[in-house]
Amino acid sequence: MSADDGSDKYPEESGRRRFVKGVVGGATLVSVGGAGVAGVNSATSSSGAGGGTTQAWAIENTAGPAPRGMPQIPLEIDSEGFVKGIWPDVETVTQGGRQVQIAEMDLGGTTYSSEWFQYCGVEGYQGARPGYESENYFRTGSNPAYDWQSSSKEQGDRFHVDDFDDYAEWGNGIGTAGIGKPATGVWRSEGADNVMPIQLIRSERVERAAQDDEWLQASTAEGFIAWLNKCTHFCCVPGYKQAADAARFGGEDGVYCQCHQSVYDPFSVVQTLFIARPRPD
Ligand code: FES
Image 1 (cartoon, helix red, strand yellow):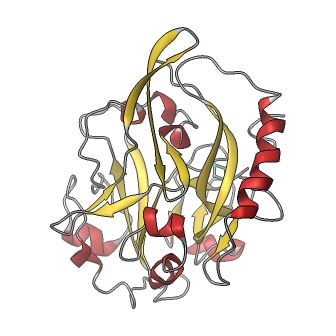
Image 2 (tube, protein in one colour):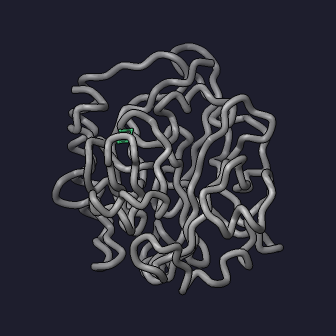
């Protein structure tokens, strides 16, 4: 069994939280996921720091060859209204007889870990190191994907709640308008050699879904949701409403990867089980 053969997809019968259709309870998630963990563990070993079997919340992969969803980045809004990702608490533990740093915390009934982001080479990025110094704000990158962002944001700028005031109506001619307003950016990448690409959306769907969901209450805020924007197939950077040809593959209202036509639904958060790659440090 490998991380790429599809076997580590979300459990078939549960693990889904479809914002549109309502929310499933958490109890089933744990039991179904638990069986999967045992199966994956028996086929795996890892060396290096961190890594191994990891259960993460992710935006669901709904079409195409990607083996699973892209990991959500829990977020918060600071006292001035800027949006920032939550990085887990850093601690030093003994692993395989040596001292290593891990970043892990309990959040919204889940163990949130930096291992969620250890795939596609990101495990070697400076920003993925538990102790990497960052204020954790999402920031505009070098080449924003949306006109609103290109015209109002400079590289390195943070995102403010007010930037998304028109989130209930925003549209760009791709798919349906009024679903949510997106931005592209980077995270934990100040002064780093590699940038961690993220997408951020503010949506009424997220606000509604978070009302009665422990995980979404803890990991989203004021309708904002974010994820690490690295396709779990072959690591391209997908886009929400960025490609006109997404409609040919049912992705006009989703997050579409142009490389091999995978589609993700940012309004369906599911649990995924995969083998996080160890950090090289
Ligand atoms: S679908 Fe292949 S890299 Fe995204």
